[in-house]
Image (cartoon, rainbow over all chains, first blue to last red):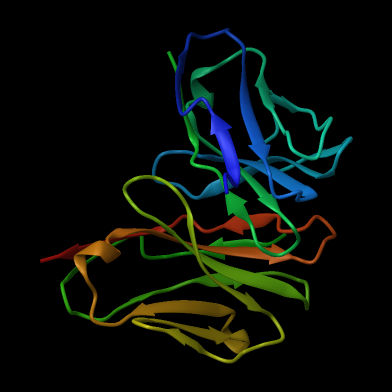
Length: 110
Length: 116
């Protein structure tokens, strides 16, 4: 079982560039989430979705956008990369009370 | 707003010692869920346990045990006879019953180093 798959695993961006972090899950979960983990810190919620077509902001949404056109996919878009967005990004899905995390994407903005 | 505090940023023990990781939480909800996750050096998040607010029974799983006390808003995690493989960052997290599934608020994590 694949579970939650994130691509890419690593990426270096230049300031001002854009990119999309991909997240897909094959467990048919309604709930999906994007978190970021800054060095030495816990995870913070960026955006979440309770089902296809429905998204909402989390604690730290500035500089990001999401979409949820299908149950399986929940991409995270960075429009104008800034050094403050250097972080590890985790996608998660949940049937309700259990969260399944992807392996993470390590993003560096230089 | 909900908050999770892990006051111990780093703990170092020698193998076979027992170690307790502290977690204190804040929430206004009466229904909530508490979690512990392990993040080994490889970086993934490994689910360890979930506890419901209405179930204060302590839990033991092998060398791991958890002590949930609503009176002190604490959910502490003890590793008995620690091993080098227990070296990791451990996160405590809280989820409130807000109709958004399992939206987690994480503590800052405790880095546990177990030396041989």
